[in-house]
Image (cartoon, rainbow, N blue to C red):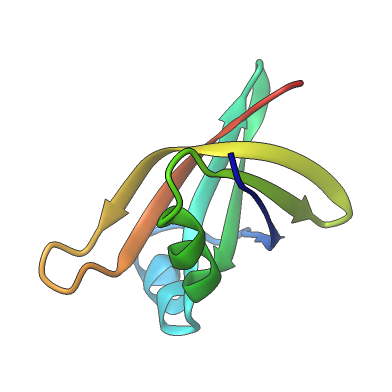
Length: 95
């Protein structure tokens, strides 16, 4: 399995308008959840995430404001016509 490092920024604004602003900035809105912890809403670099998701069985190492989380993609939503990433759900993995 490939482990790819990505830098994530925490999101504070939600909704359709906020998601569109994030996508315009070449970022992808995502949610990190699992192991009984509260979900964390983040935005990830679009191109780097798209290239990482092309690897089968990919494991992502996210740097969320100095805290490292190891995650796997649970659900990926893509634009039906262009194929761009719209939203990603990431599940936390504990060793």
